Length: 422
Ligand SMILES: *Cc1c(COP(=O)(O)O)cnc(C)c1O
Image (cartoon, rainbow, N blue to C red; front, side):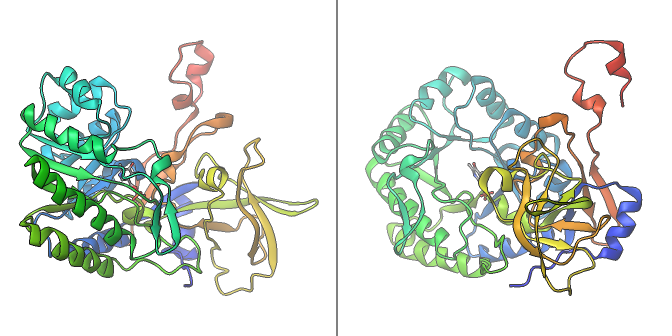
């Protein structure tokens, strides 16, 4: 499918008059429409709720938008809990799906009344010690082990993943938690990441629903919700077919009616913890071409680098690039599009066919709305960019300013000279 940016060159020219490149830009309209599509796809399930994975795009303005569409938050750390709290998410609107969790984070999550999702069997005791009891509502993360396959395609390798409890452990966990006073139970699993197939959620649902029925029968636990977690992907490359959330919702419904309803569990709420699917396509990184270099290859140097978007450098991930205003032109040049880090992996694209790029051209790097800005770091003393929101009325709001040298130097008190840099 052809990939088109959600902004035009004309809009970008206006935006860059006020905000220097690079910046991440988010599309409010796209975010809202997509959140509604998800809600509709699961409207058949009475208790359905999406807990947006904060780590994908930890910005309070984005969280507020999603809140207006009925989303809660899924947190994995102290600061994500704090941000959720500050945005007005309350009690069971917050899911705490952490792992390797420090005691103070369990305490804070419990103080907020968040749903705690235990990653490990040993965390039962650890949590009890940390908060002085077991909450009434508790969730456990399940890992069935082995390979996760759809037909003959290996989707992912849960047996190799650090997350979740084994089958035996989750049965023991439910029994012990029940003895310790837990009343309402949830189950969670995340078995494959960035899936671009309508089969993943229904397959995962089958695994989770079947184990839920057995857990209910064997332990008597009152299972209130099943959390399908994240993992619904997006088509980063133009040759991928996007997921159809309506088809996914119906696929899960079918399994729900086959497995849960006959077991008398037709009132179990379904939760999701999507990050990438909620935000990925509705953000882009806008950067300017500042250099061209002709050596053994053709390079275009841009003013963004892996600090702004590390997926290509770390995972070799594909991010589509559009040269703004040159959408219709032939892609008859081959470039490596590179950033300025002293790391050869700092390449947004390698041997990419693009139209001829001139210095000053604006490049739109697609699908950076999730796990984009948030994975950023400060290597080479580089500063993080601003985040901007393209609002539904076409205006632009800065929802996070760019870092300054002052921010970078803020964590040590060395000398007056540094304090003066801005
Ligand atoms: C990262 C994560 C998510 C979101 O994953 P996406 O691939 O962005 O949908 C959800 N739940 C947990 C526990 C996670 O770690």
